[in-house]
Length: 588
Image (tube, rainbow, N blue to C red; front, side, top):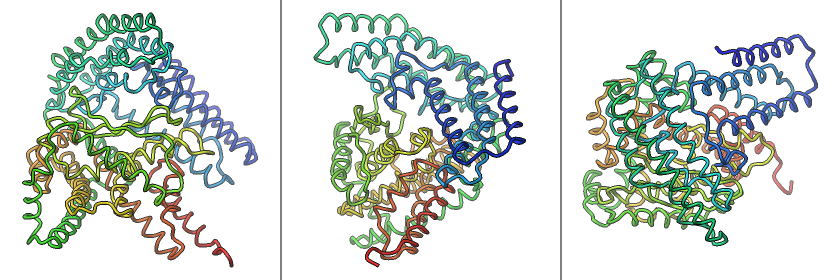
């Protein structure tokens, strides 16, 4: 531990010791101290991560890229531990439910960070789905370009890309030394992604969309500066990083698929399951739940098939998969399909919610250099000036299917991710760290739950689209089986793909998704676990409140606290149900 880190910890522990002997302050003073700590924590997080600050519309650090070095990782961990000690030194007796929840949320967040640091997860920070090489290439689509200053800030960031790639290289080299390596089959994909970034050159995109107010002189100067930074600094840095990945890093990649093959492997996967599901379920229990859900959803699909004149589910699937109507002819057709479903849902939102997103949402295709990525959502700014982005997998379109598009459009757009994240950004009266919480079981569980809300407002009228809705849910149940299969039961890649094929996942999706689960242990478990909890809470509210149950009020309650672990969501909704039940009906 370096001197700076030790000083931080000593100061925090001294504070804790004093708090344990000092008289308990009034509730108002303790809440004020806690809120001040929340704000300090949030602001330091923005300073440490300038890219995050930009993403939420805070442009104070717009000319900077974050420090990715080993020293910065250690320093930020020490800062987090100091915050944790200070937070625990604040007695919570007498605080309101909201203040107690905020305390618990930050304590859990910081404690999870301790776990991740102890496991050195930061040493395995790159794969075909996520990594510095693709996130930097998304900068031109993630930052503002409304002024000359914004362009100059962007150019400053271009100059810093070599430093970030070099720092990441140092961290990955430490992973080699510690034997903490992703699978070789995943790492072999990365150099081509780097080369694809160079070939596509997304970094020059801002030069193609200057505001009309810019002078010709500014346009020429900024274009020249961008080209010089890209050609003289960014591209050489990417080539150097690609060479490192191919010649030094990938050859050390592990041969086993399971994360349990790594040092402390059983704990490593158990912690990944806990973090992604926010439950204490064992991998074995998650696997069993997945098998149960696969059987239940398959039975629903069989009922749908027979209701439309097919003798069994297999013949219904065969008819769908052989119908050219459901095979996209181009990348643009997939993008247009998603946009159609999102925009048809938007005017229906007032039937399901009271609070609506302020910002718009757009749809775009995943660029070729990032083709291994799955369809995903990137949030816009709270003021709505930069739209949320649904980014859709479109590579090799004729190998894909349109059957799932309606469900996945609702998942990624509205009423799914764009709805939930935009509403969270608008919440008032909560600490800022709660407005952008990242609990996957909540966020992905909400998005999967949101897929079925189309039926509530009259969509999925085509039986094939309704089959697509069920197929999308089945896909998430399959994930419970195959993620635990890979990492806890030693399944081979071929076993996973065969299981996905048997459950009507087309081959193009099965291939990329299998590699995703191998590279990102536990993440695929979040969707179904969160959806099942939200369904459970909805059923509980309907049963307890009877005719007083209001779907809009229920949805507002789920969304109005921001993202949180499922047990805390359960407790929060339970309090709301009791509060609603105790209110006297209007007019009495």
